[in-house]
Amino acid sequence: MREAGSYVLEAGGKRLRPAILLVVSRLLGYRGDHDVRYGAIVEMIHTATLVHDDIIDSAAVRRGRVTANHRWGNQLTVLLGDWLYIRAIELALEVAEVPAMQALSHATSQMTEGEILGLDFQGQIRVTREQYLEITRRKTAELFSVASSLPTYFSPEYERYRPALEEYGRNIGMCFQIVDDILDITGSQKSLGKPVFSDLREGKLTLPFIALLPHLDASERKTLEEILATGQFRETSPDQLRDLLQRHRAVEESREAANEFARLAVAALDDLPKGPELDALTAAPRFVIDRDY
Amino acid sequence: MREAGSYVLEAGGKRLRPAILLVVSRLLGYRGDHDVRYGAIVEMIHTATLVHDDIIDSAAVRRGRVTANHRWGNQLTVLLGDWLYIRAIELALEVAEVPAMQALSHATSQMTEGEILGLDFQGQIRVTREQYLEITRRKTAELFSVASSLPTYFSPEYERYRPALEEYGRNIGMCFQIVDDILDITGSQKSLGKPVFSDLREGKLTLPFIALLPHLDASERKTLEEILATGQFRETSPDQLRDLLQRHRAVEESREAANEFARLAVAALDDLPKGPELDALTAAPRFVIDRDY
Image 1 (cartoon, rainbow over the protein chains, first blue to last red):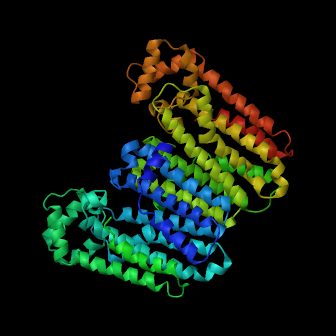
Image 2 (tube, chains in turn brown, yellow; image 1 turned 180 degrees about the horizontal axis):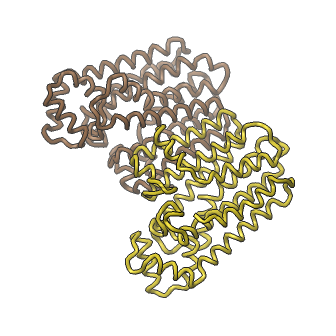
Image 3 (cartoon, each protein chain N blue to C red; image 1 turned 90 degrees about the vertical axis):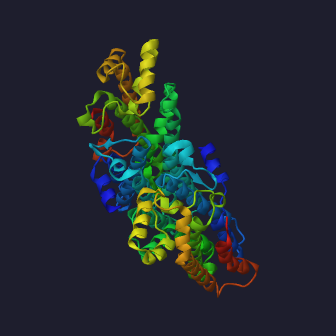
């Protein structure tokens, strides 16, 4: 467990959720050490879901390395995910802030339910924009929302900032996921740390493809359906598909959607205390959009 | 989720953990409704581990029915287990009794760690009796221990009974698991609701086999190692193996170990309030031993 746990944690990642949590905590003027604890808890929950997701997607590569499930098998990996969840809960119970725990566990059940909703649509071309946004909110945005609002549970005087910070986190989470979807198309295997078009290969229709669909003729649609269903590129190449997406401005349209969520995230910060921390939070969506890994 | 969840819950099972919890609660004279809540929580945690265990063991049949992983695939089943864990935590957070939650999450992390320890020995013949007992304590006995002692968290006046009830639960849990191991050898597929010698086929060396080992010659030992490693009966039949176990009193020896844990469980009850509830708790180990499935 130590070996597999270290392997997964050392793979890195951006630590974006704990980073936001720590900046918000400082913005509010919090002086204790619960922010570090909850930062770790949020990252452990995030990592647990990644580990279980890789089983679900039978993923072989994540963050440029062989996934835990491919290295140690599904058996240990199911347990590694369970163990990370339970240890996160134990860490939270040591400080016993019940409302903060309720927010965390609510976000976690939303994530699981989002995954389940996503599975329902797996391999299917019939996903609406609204369904995509609902799945994304649950799977990704709610944990960002709780990460950014958790410090408001540290003192009653912070409570008034909670709705704004929840809104900030939720919108930055939506933005983050849409940018992820775009990078899966425009990135390279090297920069992504996993194969391009992974989502499509795993049977997931993301926003750029939902934007593309109305522009396709029957045969193009059939080709897309086949990739979704089989996970294989046969009648078309990744480059051809990329051209199609560019031609119909599907990526651009998705980028606009990401920008809109970024704008909403920044707007939510209006009434928060000014200073370098607020500047960092305001800059974060731009960082999320401009990243190329 | 509703469909898969109902399927798993409707498969039944003995509901032994919540039954013990409810009897202990009544024994202590508790009058609220937290016992029902915690009974549900304990059974949900137990069910979540069963569901994930079936993925780990690639089990096809449990409680006489096709397992969730075989019916809905590993994908949904990983999520089903996660969701049961998280919902159990949310149910516990609604009443926010932190020490009770700590006891529950401690037992749950022990279970996961016991599973991981068990995986380490999977397919291996080199498991000592001490290692077996340690794995069994974590995998099975700790949840029984917390189920039987949880009602002592409902009121400060019950606290003095906690060590005795933890001891009772732990010993009945050990007894339960050893009887399970025996039934996997002596039962029929119909009565077990799963194939006989499932443990061995899954690469798990249980107590009867640990008792058998010193009596085997090199060739018999090699045959056993092969079944453990391959999951297949080739050079020997289940009936021949059963004869071997009987001949060397391996099953009898294990039954004596189960009886000893049953005796320890009953002995732990010495200072508890007399009455019909105590009689039921005293009779429970006998029920565990005499079940024939």
